[in-house]
Image 1 (cartoon, rainbow, N blue to C red):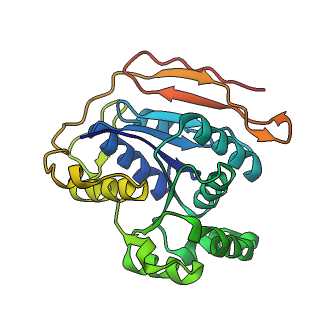
Image 2 (spheres, helix red, strand yellow):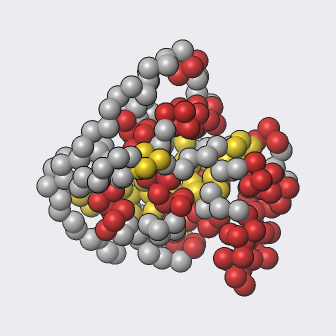
Image 3 (spheres, rainbow, N blue to C red):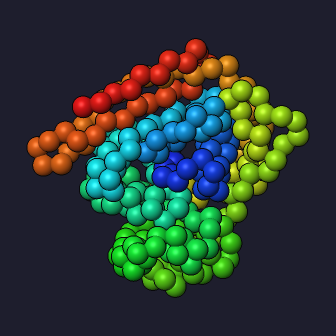
Length: 265
């Protein structure tokens, strides 16, 4: 099966469901042989230690919404993943803005774990602005995925998304027996949801899914245990007028000893 580079973007902390689900999804996609970048503003230590072997961690840096969108735009332009999947209201709006700035060269799949009413309530005094932004930007997504039928229907109703552009898929990882080893998550995404998500991502990216449909054994690879992390620091210019305004750090989880270097403009 041909493999691809895919990007998963979250902006919530490590204790949020969307972050845990994207880490489990990244592990599963990497296990199938794909190149996966987990992209986020800042990685807490437990996120770094939970990375599966082969997953790259891209840190855009702690910054305001506009600068974060610009940094993500620069990442998309430079690394050209075949698809960007984001999870959570704020991350989804940032991803769609970055995709528009990148002239929509990379399709965006947006994902919601929590009920929409809950996410809007968490937005506080930005609730109304978030609802307007959803109505404007969510229809631009290649696909909208909800963790349940109720969430999916609420998204379609709130943002005016055609039913054909929505899908229901629960990506909650399942707890595995025994304690997690260093660099491993203690929960995994089951084969069924993993393969369904891969099919949806490839379809959103406009790729031929026939080979995937004809290969029932593609998920037979066993998880690899990570031995360490190798961190490579790469400066990235995010354009804001003529000024460079952002950098990111790439953590390549490649089984080598860990070294961390921060980059600042």
